[in-house]
Image 1 (tube, each protein chain N blue to C red):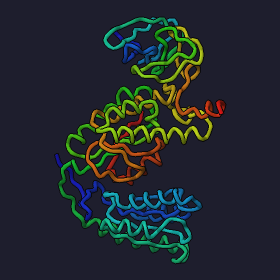
Image 2: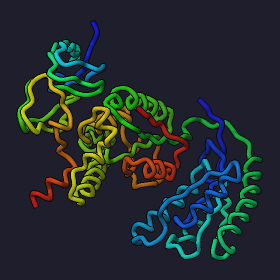
Image 3: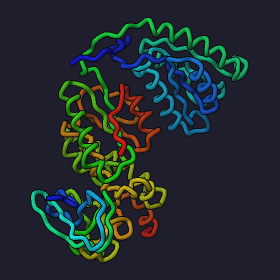
Image 4: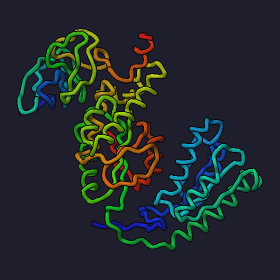
Length: 100
Length: 303
């Protein structure tokens, strides 16, 4: 079976596209040794990520089972997960300035 | 397994046999470039340092220039200075000479300008390249090799294939008794807990956390969001969203070997195995630091 995207850890809430994927497509995602299917709500370029499940504002984004950032808005399942809706938690001098 | 290398007086082994032309200060970069352009077998070391810097920074310049001159891939060295720089020339010259290498020094303001210095240095470099060419290569075990690791133009595939592949190469060299150096501390941010779990002991683990804390504080001090700088615009286009995500892929270069020690920028390791060196991810700085640390070459992926 052709795989459209992969996630390396069961806890991950995003998967990485291994080819260019199209809106409306049912993506076949390999998560560890399991396979699941997600209807894509947006085009996903090769190498980019999409949500495997709904993610709430402020929720941590997990890839490789590790925290890679947090959601800056509510994101439904199957949406492009990138800089427009995920932010870094580290090296954020801009946040420090606001807090000061 | 053996490789053909060049034996140096201080016991290190080179895989190249260049005459290094070192710039003591930014102002003589063009002189150095003109010399290297004219003499095959020379290697150029230009930079933007050496003047109007704090003593702390000049100290790093002195140390790094000395260490670059000592790199085993250099047979001998010509240092070009202007005459009024802040770089401590005695420290650099004596430091390199202590490794047993021939070091020549030309001062532009004493030689009569850039043209005369270039002409004199070209003749000197030709003589030194000839001298270097008389040295024969000998077989050495690969445990004499020092590998530097670096990733370039990362995207989301970097952490999946090329970085783990470099990790395998690093593990092989470490198993054979060599030295492998992991840098790019900016790309430890968000993954330092995993790296620290590979530390050979608690001191090394704390050293890794300490380097990351220092690097992140430096980034925070400018009061900006690190994104755009890290990950870069190209990384983001390739699908990497945050520095944490980039780091989790970047540290795959470390392979599975235990991390034996943590070093400051450009310091040659005194232990064998996998070690960490303080350095940013930015190519000119880390590659210079790895060369100063004595690397013969680097494992580098480009996505």
